[in-house]
Length: 182
Image (cartoon, rainbow, N blue to C red; front, side, top):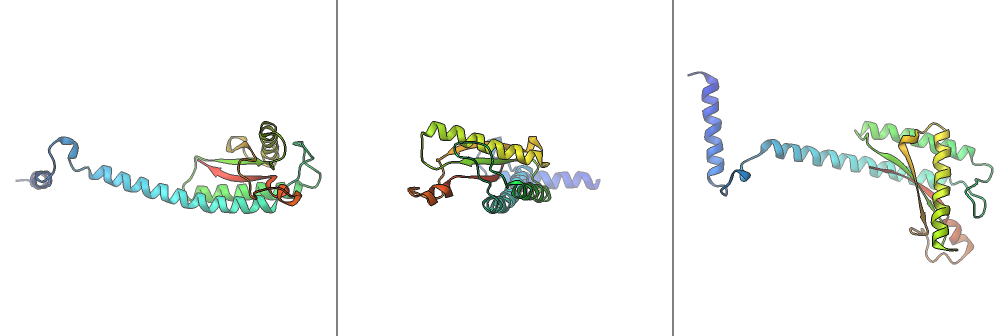
């Protein structure tokens, strides 16, 4: 008897023994390959989530440190933002490398614009979207691929400070944030 035939009989016996106590139906057969794929997928998702959490923490910190101001009720940047925008672009390049090392390749950097609660919500939504788009354009002008960045207007939907009933609190809520999205 050749060894491969005995191995096949042994595996068939294991399969029969494994299925003897299982509920009836082919759907309940042991699928070790499927279990392995599930485990690998779960590990990959866990690793991706860990890298994303680290990258997002860095992006939020750098975004807060390098906030540019806009003219009142406008998407026009006030002078003096160039150094901050260069720093943000460098951070995005650094985070892109970190994502690649972590095996994350399918992502977008998201610039979200935020306003204070003053004014009409519809106007604030549109203004925050325009401001986020301005930051995204500036980052593209500094080397970030336009295919890797998106912008979204959040208006006053995610305030940092509530209520924003003083000029200082309102100023904290007027911002943009950078995050990585999948």
